Image 1 (cartoon, rainbow, N blue to C red):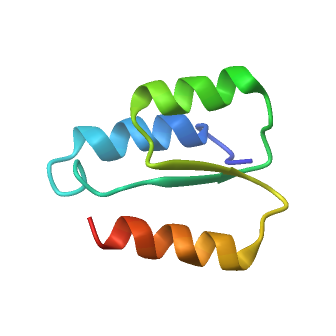
Image 2 (tube, rainbow, N blue to C red; image 1 turned 180 degrees about the horizontal axis):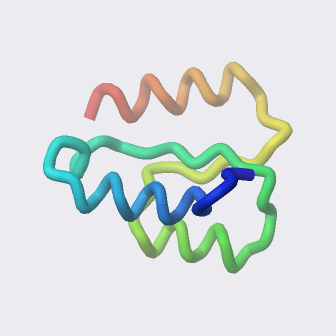
Image 3 (tube, rainbow, N blue to C red; image 1 turned 180 degrees about the vertical axis):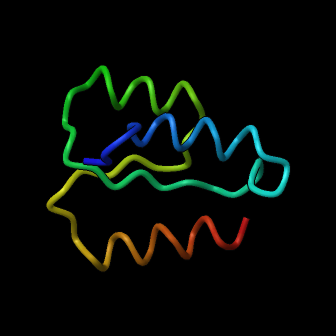
Length: 68
């Protein structure tokens, strides 16, 4: 967990900054609540993955979004 803001707030700040507004964001989190996942998807995150995660799946997901 982040100390001052949550990951979705970090995402909002990335979207607000011109230099990072179009960078695909993969959320890797311990939060499993459907409401958090739904909020992230509504905000436009590229992918939402829960911990524990499969490293191979993470790498493949990163490759997929790096090509876009």
